Length: 443
Ligand SMILES: Nc1nc2c(ncn2[C@@H]2O[C@H](COP(=O)(O)OP(=O)(O)OP(=O)(O)O)[C@@H](O)[C@H]2O)c(=O)[nH]1
Ligand SMILES: [Mg+2]
Image (cartoon, rainbow, N blue to C red):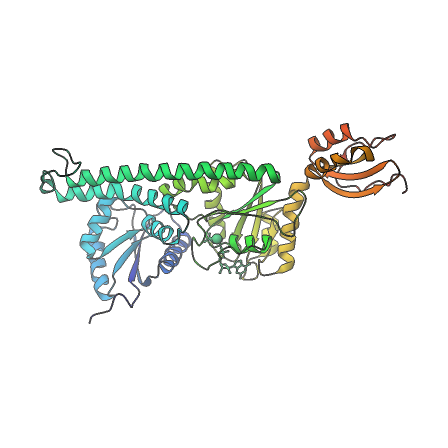
């Protein structure tokens, strides 16, 4: 029976070895995620093949006998490829492929393929390409080794020197291409840094980054919090670029929100490295809103993985706001509140919940602010711009001599303005932002 491959999705078998250190629940959750990744790539997972083993087989990941069994299952399930739920070495992949008789993709390759398909901006495409080439290089070396000496010493044309084999040539091409892409990327990052500097100058430094496991709902919250049209999709790694928008309705201080690439267990190392510049946005944020899908039974593991990656990129010191999302789909709200004090439990589908998250973010940035009353004589009205640019003006009154402004802002800004525009006879001391404004002088 022949199948038309262009019409039908590729049929895949999910394959995994369970080591004694992995609990059944963890093992199952990881396989479920692999199936989800496969679905994102448009594959149909037609079977699962597992083995309990003390460790991965050095030659072929599964034990020798199991590899033969796998070959039978491939025939039975009419599978087109095998997905391995771990990162395996080039030679393990090669041997498994030979014995099973179909293409083998390991977890890293599956994730790389998704990133490759979803990358749309020039920067994201370059980053993914670098990661893919980094993944390919050792595999090509392995393939060349197995191809043996007949690959060598075909007569040299082009830039190839005397004894260089095709494999070596290809590897040199890969290295050159990676260097070229890296250069392009550096130029883009430089451009972005200047843009970013300009943006920050204009808008102050209150920044929150939405970070978290893939599919947790970061882009949905980004949309809800900023009224912007970023891509939301029930796919893994829908977002590969960081977008930045202001919190809406606007606030003082103005808060910028950025959406970031999602994390996943065993994120290929090349990807962590290549997405570092994207994730730098997260490092620059003064608050990380860590979004967790509370309805996912494996949310605790996802939370831990995200924290690990954040540590890895040096973001461990940035303050966190833990946001448990999708509570409309499930999850134990009281238990979450008990276990994670200060967290936000919400659904992006409920307007009131989004407003509460909005409030919690603004409250974070207002924490350190102070209030003061300034007096601006009519003769100094040209300084109004300076005050409005650095503070929020809460209240304004005027009398015959000038204007009284109650302002709230960063302690240093308020102190500087107070020294210049002290409110006359009874200067207002900078006071914490919370108490209600004092009434001074009737109009
Ligand atoms: N039921 C429910 N679904 C939600 C909620 N928030 C988001 N979703 C859905 O979850 C899916 C993933 O949402 P995204 O916002 O794309 O997730 P993300 O975290 O940006 O994902 P990546 O970009 O892949 O990292 C979409 O189908 C959303 O509609 C929620 O509070 N409740
Ligand atoms: Mg997203």
